[in-house]
Length: 117
Image: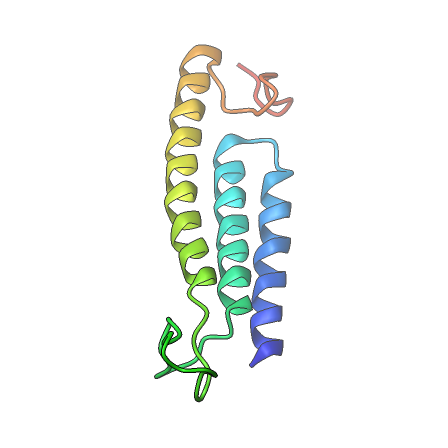
């Protein structure tokens, strides 16, 4: 199971980095989204999700019986999802504004050598 999650995180990261290095804004937004998915999955996997265990330790017990679930990675992933959605919305609006002002969707603002107008 750990190998599968590691493979998925690696593939998402590799695809995200590849898309970020493209020269257009839409692949850049998709690449950042894939990277945020990879980070969310990595954070969630660090929590070692346990089914049926309480997320809070009973203070009346001297030692927790049977363990507990760590709620911190779940809270971090929830926060990262919200921040990632806001970042994606901001990047899309920024890309649309740049396209309207520059007339193309290149990241550096230069025209594509293949586009002859």
